Length: 578
Image 1 (tube, rainbow, N blue to C red):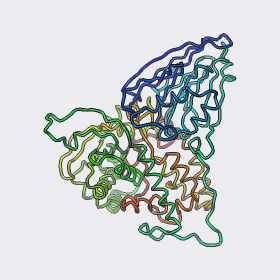
Image 2: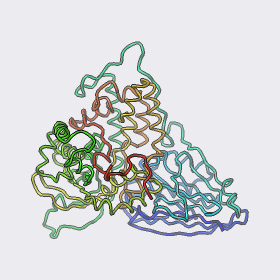
Image 3: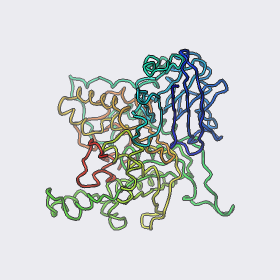
């Protein structure tokens, strides 16, 4: 008997279901298919249980969102619509063609009963997790799962590649694992002419004109004529992407005021959307654009994470042993501190006054000025070192097969931010009150640095090889996105029954930006905070986000102090000890 298991347990707290079938292949092999799926209901009016089982016997396990490509009304569920659409099709190519029209993050497993074929794939950017154990002589079964629980002698999980749509012809399976390879097809992604949802385009290779010097941006306050249309295009595409990601989210009933005459307070109104909010330009733009498309009386949560980092605290108290002396360090810290940080030092616990907390509070003020009628819940999520240590085994299991020190730093920040347990203040001068976010949709600004030249390595590439080297580096960024960390992030965030949505990684936004000449998006000749992500900074300034437009890049693990927690632990890409 050949075993095929399909499972996912953490992502959906609303409904779970298991479904099993047995199929006889043409080679007289008995194939047992075991499907288990859970539902996080973020689409449609009615409760839904997965797997989706069509009346003709097709089975769909769907972990994703269809924002464009199928006509889905607000009251309808996209998984049900996709299941129905796929069951009407005949032939492998028709199913692959349909998938090529879809825009949105997804991972799926689909059994087509008539052809006895099992389809499975992730979206082109890998925005949803799908792990696979390929059959071996010792472990002769196929396992597909959207979640992980760490290492296990019963399987060896790896991230499924996004390069193909995989099709397993069950009819051709024999009794030996050697038949599996010849029964598996790896199909290229197809898309109708003009459709951009099946794959990402290549980075524009155009260089600046060689006969005249490329004009330098003089100020973010004035958009040069040659950049005006690109700025407007970025705002249009990004605004559309955010609108699709915050609209038509079902409202959960989490209680009501004690009296029908009592008007609910802003804190008692459940939130549907939160932003992973560092105070940087990316997350601030996501928050501002979300404000435009969410009902004005509905709060938006800004999830701001800070870790108690003994290593950082020890340096602040004792100085950096072996580095600059204590007196110079204090002087440098005072010079580097912003006016906001100095003002906050008396009202906030200094152990949690990390760079992202200071930047976040500053950008909260800017959002409040621009959107005066909106209730912004700035959620201070403070993680004591002991709680960080206690959560490590859980987080390491969830993020598996990712296993580097940097993976853990990023995963820990996302794990606690997605949990949404913190405190809020009614004003900057009041004491904080306990608060737990009810938002199930979390906007994440990931992707802008890769698309718009926001990393220091892009400046280094320019210094080494000019504009051609920058183009090559940006293409490498695009090629790496599906293989880097989106699957890990999905597993970590979904552990709390939440879903990350990435406005910058809409394929429409991606293909718009990669189609622009690189010198329109960035200018490494200009100072940091202006030339990096220049186009996005101009767009932010045009939208009125003056302070956000000049924010410098700070990685999440460093801005929240999630990295380098303990002396003696390797940094970056080092493998975690077992």
